[in-house]
Amino acid sequence: MIVKLNDKAYEVEENTSLAAFIENLGLKPQGMAIAIDHKVVPRSKWAETILSDSLELMLIHAVSGG
Amino acid sequence: MKKLQIAGKEFDSRLFLGTGKFSSNQSMRDAITASQTQMVTVAMKRLDMENKEDDMLVHIQKPGIQLLPNTSGVRNAKEAVFAAQLAREAFETNWLKLEIHPDPRYLLPDPVETLKATEELAALGFVVLPYIQADPVLCKRLEEAGAATVMPLGAPIGTNKGLRTRDFLEIIIEQSNIPVVVDAGIGAPSHAAAAMELGADAVLVNTAIAIAGDPLAMAEAFRLAVESGRMAFEAQLAGESHTAEASSPLTSFLR
Image (cartoon, rainbow over all chains, first blue to last red; front, side, top):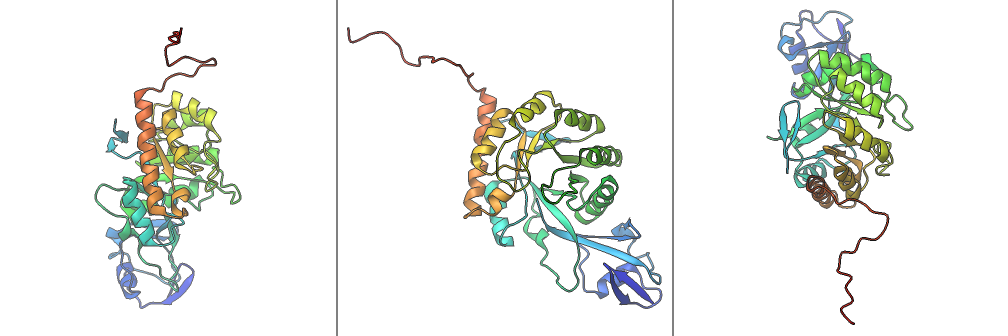
């Protein structure tokens, strides 16, 4: 199945958790936040959040700013 | 000097530092250290998987430094509340610099959306520091809405023009029951000192330090100016007079 992260499509296997997806991308979870359909998914729920087909994820991270 | 208190938290430093526009993370880190700031702003961006940047947080996160995520990039209250929730998750803090400026030319804050967002975010338990126009009426409304501070601008963001809103800042400071942080437009240590002499509780500086020839030395110059201005305010400045007031005896000792 396909999920989108920041508008980019990724092929993922069925029953992949959000935590596993992020880990497979080689991302460290510190200093970032993820929203699915404009709802923030708390880090504590990443492991139990199972991705489904056509899901759109938004991932933000820290950058400098005033 | 009196410590600054915001939402029950004490700060020794009254200089808040923005992290934008530094030429490198090292330069930013040096400026943070030299400024002795305890409040540092950060922004958020969608992660670009093609162009992964260094984690800049490692250069900022230190004991004694409060991270202040901003909502730069949002255009209305609804987006600001969403950004605030992302920030709380990413930075593990409920402190927030609320900035809603839909117009990219002058980056002037939208007062209606800012008030609306402050009401919602305060109800959700955020410590809200809204960036706003130097509008004394709006400042009172934000105070009633539950803002932790007000952050009126001295001049538009990044212009380095100083306290162009001085007369209104004076009214805001006189009327406010919450800390007043002068944000934006402060371009020189003398501007920062002037804001502190007026009785501002703190100043937020970014561009003036970040793009200075020597950001580290400029950070120190701002630190001294903020301390000096605050000290002068607490010492109570002598009043102005239209005519001369002799500071030496006028006796005619030559006769």
